[in-house]
Structure formats: structure tokens, C-alpha cells
Length: 375
Image (cartoon, rainbow, N blue to C red; front, side, top):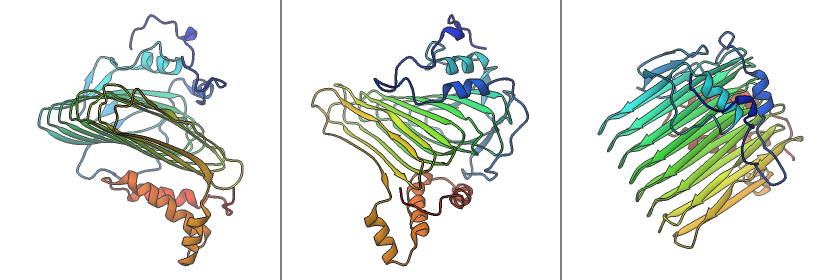
């Protein structure tokens, strides 16, 4: 268990408001009410491997694990118990920390299966150290049917010079699930960091990605696919701090809302140190059916005029009529057109994975989609 000077009951849910008029988008009270001793193991939705030839690690609801990671005393360099109450409770509940070390010049592929509790909360922390001139590909898969539990993960990664790190996070929950995941990455000179997310459903799913780039000619890329049905909520936070000269930083988030709640927020910050860098932020969401609540509020902040480029686009809209017209002219009805759009967005995120199991899940979910697609 991590030690901290803060009294948890006095720690706010989060220190900074999400907007001047709104405390926060996240369902912190719901998460807190669901936390407690873990009960049982929920039936996973994804039962097939997704990363061919990768080492397999299994995280269990009781805090134990099975696989090739190293176990250490609880520690977290990039997280603090003073940041927020739910994070503090998580950090104070850790029984151990798991470490994935990639030595200089080494390549590793690891698939991590997180088994969610049927009720109560589970807690895991993973540290990833990627040495110089190395590469690592990691898939974190968490899915559950009929789970009201709160599976929580914190991951922190340190990427050495000239190294590559790619992380896939796949979270698929039915409407009672309450998964929470924080990821923070520090990338040094000439490093490449890529984070991809597939975030589907849950009563309140929260996924936070933060990357900090330092040194020259580094790259950070985030690419996420979000989807929610009626009664579901997906809350996604993306932050990149670009301090790297000659770098490339981008955030791409696409979402489809079938009557639930989708949230995308965060910031791409380009500092004065990021000379001659290229930066892009895109957040595109589609409303299908009635009752959808969609918030696309990420921001781009640029210090000075030293970057080569810095672009920003956000959109929340019904499905584009011109796209539907094009699809119909090729013999597709509205539902078939929608499925083509969903799979096109999903395929960009799944590139490099064995995505058959995830695509099967998408097909099952789309069967529950509203029959009409007007906003």
C-alpha cells in the first residue's frame, strides 16, 4: 500500500474544473459508491487473443497476477495521492506494482488481460521502462458482462532515446461496468509513442491518456474510437505536452453515440521548446438516434509562433448526408452505411492487432443500435 500524507476524505474528486461553469464531466460519485472489496470474476466479453505471438499477463480482481512481469513494492512516480480522491483510493489500495522492463536494443510484445470483478473494485499499477533503441508493443484488454465492478488501472511508461512504444487499450463493458484507466508516458529524444484506444460502453467508462515529449525529434500519436449505447457513458481525456523540437504530435478521436453519453476533453499543448514541430488535434463525433449527449471540448494551446503547423478541429453532428447519399448510390441502406463508417474508423485503431474478436463484439453491439439514424 502506498503511503500518503493526505487524508483521502479531504481530497476533492479533481483539482481543476473541466470548464469555467462545470466542475467535472467524470462520474466520480458513481465510481466511489461502487468501490469496495472485490467480489467474484466477471465473465469477459473478449475471449480470444488480440496480439499474435505476445507474452500473456493476467491481472486478477484480488490484486494478484499471472505472467512474466516483475512484482515490486507499490510505487508510482507519475501519480500522486493528492491529485484526486478516486486516484488516491486506488493508489492506497495497491498491494504491489508490476514492472515491464525492455532492455536496450530489445523488442517485447505483451498482452495484458484484466479480469474485472463482478462487484467491488480491483487495483493494479504497471510501470513500463523502455531502454534506448528498443521497442515495445503492449495491449491492455478489459471486458465484462454483467459486472457492476470498478476495475482500476494506472500505467506509467518511460521511453528512452530512439525507442518506440505502442499501447492498445481495449475496454468493452455492458452498461453496469465502471472501468477506470490512467496512462502517463514520458518520451525522451527521438522516441516514438503511440496510444490507441477502443472504448465501448459501460455505465461510466473513464480512460485518461497523457504524454510528455522532451528532447528533439520525438513523436506522440493518440488515436481513439469511442461508442456508447443508451444508458452507457464513455469519458475520454487526452493530453499531450509537446516540448520537443522538430517533433510531431497528434490526437485523433472518433466516436459514435447511439443515445448514450460521450465525452472527449483534454489539451494538446505546444510549448516554446517545440520549435519547428507539427501538431494536429481532431475530435469528430456522430449522433445516431435520439437522446444522445456528446461533449467534444479538447483544446489546442500554442506558445509563440515557432511551430511549423498547429491545427484543431472538433465536430458533433448527425451522420453526413453526403456520405449517406454516396453509400446509398452504391446499394447500401442506412444501417449498412453506418456499419461501414464504424468499421472504417475502428480499423485505423486496430491496425497491428488481431482484431477479429473485437470486430465480432462491434457487430453484436450494432445489432442493438437504433433502427433510425436521424439525430
